[in-house]
Image (tube, rainbow, N blue to C red):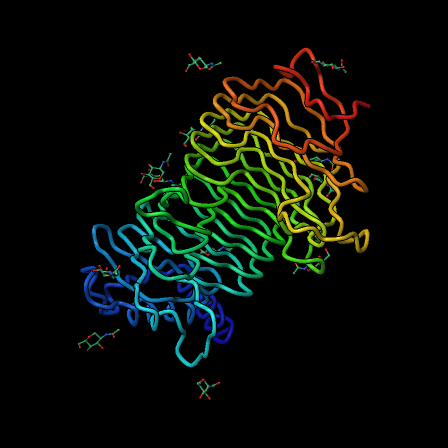
Amino acid sequence: MNRLLSLLAGLSSLTLILGQDYRVLDFNATGNGIADDTNAVRAALAAAAATNGGRVIFDYSRIFLTGCFQVKKNVILDVRGMIKGSNLSDHYVFPGKNSSTWEPLIFGSNMKNITITGGGIIEGQGSIWPKLVYLYNTQDITVYNITLRNSPMYNLAFEHVSNVHVYNVTILNPDSFSTSNPSHNTDGVNMYGASNVLIENSYISTGDDAIALYSGGCSYNASENVIVRNLTVGASHGLSIGSITCGGVRNVTFQDITIDGSWIGVRIKSQRGRGGLVQNITYSNIKMNNMNYCIQLTMNYSSTYIPPTSYNVTPHFQDINVHDVTCNKGYYGWHLEGLDDSEINANFWNIQLTNYTNLYRNPCVHIYGTCDNSTVLPNCPSCMRIV
Ligand SMILES: *[C@@H]1O[C@H](CO)[C@@H](O)[C@H](O)[C@H]1NC(C)=O
Ligand SMILES: *[C@@H]1O[C@H](CO)[C@@H](O)[C@H](O)[C@H]1NC(C)=O
Ligand SMILES: *[C@@H]1O[C@H](CO)[C@@H](O)[C@H](O)[C@H]1NC(C)=O
Ligand SMILES: *[C@@H]1O[C@H](CO)[C@@H](O)[C@H](O)[C@H]1NC(C)=O
Ligand SMILES: *[C@@H]1O[C@H](CO)[C@@H](O)[C@H](O)[C@H]1NC(C)=O
Ligand SMILES: *[C@@H]1O[C@H](CO)[C@@H](O)[C@H](O)[C@H]1NC(C)=O
Ligand SMILES: *[C@@H]1O[C@H](CO)[C@@H](O)[C@H](O)[C@H]1NC(C)=O
Ligand SMILES: *[C@@H]1O[C@H](CO)[C@@H](O)[C@H](O)[C@H]1NC(C)=O
Ligand SMILES: *[C@@H]1O[C@H](CO)[C@@H](O)[C@H](O)[C@H]1NC(C)=O
Ligand SMILES: *[C@@H]1O[C@H](CO)[C@@H](O)[C@H](O)[C@H]1NC(C)=O
Ligand SMILES: *[C@@H]1O[C@H](CO)[C@@H](O)[C@H](O)[C@H]1NC(C)=O
Ligand SMILES: *[C@@H]1O[C@H](CO)[C@@H](O)[C@H](O)[C@H]1NC(C)=O
C-alpha cells in the first residue's frame, strides 16, 4: 500500500512537472536587448527538457538578445516580449559542435509537440544567413499569435514534418526588389516532406516565396494534404509549389487569399531533373493586384536546358485547378510552359485578368485541360489544348 501511494505520488509530481513554467529571466537573462542572453535562454530550454517539456517564457516588454538555441519535445516558446537573433556569427554554432553551415536561430530535430506563440516578436536582424525557425523530422507543430521579422533566410522552415498548424502569424521582411534594403531567400513558410498542414489567418510580406511547398529530393516523401487559406500577402515571389518536386506534391489547396504587390501569385515551378508528380492542386478565390505575373505554371523554372533523362525526374503536373481568381494590373497574365513530352494538365474557370500589360509570357506551350470561355476573361489561354 505504501509502495502504491508513493508510486502514485511520484506519478502526480511527474504530471505536475510536465508543463511547468520556466522564465528566461529566472535563468539570469537581462532581457535588456544589449547583453548576450544566449546562456540563459539555453539554460531555460535545458531545464524544460529535463522535465520532459514545459512553457519557456520570454517576458513582455523585454528583449532577449540571443544566439541559436534548440527546442526539445513538449516545449511552448511563449514569446511575450522579443527574441532578437544575435548578429554575431559565432553565436550560430552550438557548443561542442563543428558546423560548416549556419545553425538556425531556433532549431528542433526528431521532436514532437512544439508550440511557438505569446503575442511577441522574433526579430532576426536580417544580418547573417541562418533560418529563423527550423524544425526537422518533427510532429505536432503549432505556431500562432506571433510576429516573425527580418529573418536572414527562411522564416519558418519545416522539413519531414506532419501535423502542422500555423495561424494568426505576421511575417515581415523587406521586398527582394527594394533598392535600399532588399532581402533574399526569406521565404515565409518553407516546407518540404510536409504532410497534414494547415496555414491560415496570417499576413506575409517577404523577399521570396510567401509559401514554398516542395519535396526536397527524389528520395523524399511527398508533401501532401496541405491547406493554406485566408492569407493576406504583400511582397513575395508567390504561393509556390516547387521547384524541387521529384518526391511529389499532392492534395494541396490555396484558398481565400489576397495578394498585393507580389512578383508572382499562383505559381507551380519545376524543370527537368527536379520533376516528379504534382497532383491535385487547387487555387481558389485568389484576388491579386499589382503583380508581375498573375498565374505561372512552368516546367522550365531554370532556363538552362536539361535534356530528357528519365520519367521520374521529368515533372508532371496533373489535375491543377485554378478558379475564382482575379488579377488586376499584372505585367504578364499567364505564364504556361509545359514540356513537349509532359503536357501540363490544368482546369481554369472564373478567372478575370484586367489591366495587364501582356496577356502571355512566351512561350505559351504544352498545356491541356478544360477552360470555360464564358468565365475566363478576357479569354482562355490561346495555347491550351481543350479536352
Ligand atoms: C544567477 O546568478 C546568481 C548570482 O550570480 C547565481 O547565484 C545563480 O546561480 C544564477 N542562476 C542561474 C540559473 O544561472
Ligand atoms: C505538449 O506540450 C505542452 C507543454 O509542455 C504540454 O502541456 C502538453 O500536455 C503537451 N501535449 C501532449 C499531447 O503531450
Ligand atoms: C548587431 O546587433 C546589435 C544588437 O542588436 C545592434 O546594435 C547592431 O546595430 C547590429 N549590427 C549590425 C551590423 O546589424
Ligand atoms: C572542429 O574543427 C576544428 C577546425 O576545423 C578541428 O581542429 C577540430 O578537430 C574539430 N572538432 C571536432 C570535434 O570535429
Ligand atoms: C492570441 O493573442 C490574443 C491577444 O494576446 C489573446 O487574446 C488570444 O487568446 C490568443 N489566442 C490564443 C489561442 O491563445
Ligand atoms: C493575433 O496575434 C496577435 C499577436 O501577434 C494578437 O495581438 C492578436 O490579438 C491575435 N489575434 C487573435 C484573433 O487572436
Ligand atoms: C482571416 O484572417 C484574419 C486575420 O488575418 C482574421 O481577422 C479573420 O477573422 C479571418 N477570417 C476567417 C473567416 O477566419
Ligand atoms: C515517409 O513515408 C513512409 C510511408 O508513409 C513513412 O513510414 C515514413 O515515416 C515517412 N518518412 C518521413 C521522414 O516522414
Ligand atoms: C488527399 O487527401 C484526402 C483527405 O485528406 C485523402 O483522403 C486522400 O487519400 C489524399 N489523396 C492522396 C492522393 O494523398
Ligand atoms: C485533393 O486535395 C484535396 C485537398 O486539397 C482533398 O480534399 C481531396 O480529397 C483530394 N482529392 C483526391 C482525389 O485525393
Ligand atoms: C483597371 O485600371 C483602371 C485604372 O487604374 C481602374 O480604374 C480600373 O478599375 C481597373 N480595372 C479593374 C477591373 O480593377
Ligand atoms: C475560346 O475563345 C477563343 C477566342 O477568344 C477561341 O479561339 C476558342 O476556340 C474558344 N474555345 C472554346 C473551347 O470555346
